[in-house]
Length: 163
Image (cartoon, rainbow, N blue to C red; front, side, top):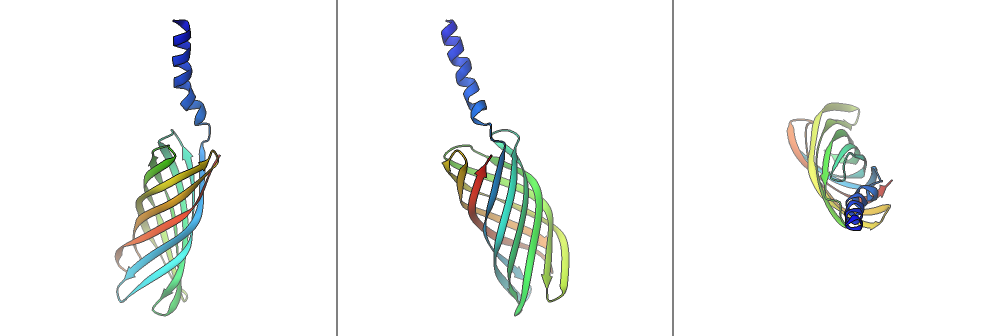
């Protein structure tokens, strides 16, 4: 009976020990489409995230992106900075969803604009080993106020380091 109790106790503690990694660091490529009155912009850039895992399922996220392209035949850049929460299912194929709040900064030919922004989305990470995953896809709806209220799309992919 004692052996059975010990075996059950150890089996419940194993998932806790396996979750010794508290941080995920994502870096990768970002494609975003910004739709504005009179013109649309297809942009490419980067995205980075730092996620602190409160539990295996719940994390606190810091997110930054930079996207670059042309709008009305002029070069433009959009930088976003967010914070929020992420829910994930820890497995070999790990789907996640997040809700992030922050700001967006637009710049084109000396004209700049900063506004409140949100990012709602999710994606799928595929675990390669204990320390590395591939973010197969992350798709987000980005809302903000650049020229008028807009809802724009962004897709990202890259690598996630676990430590």
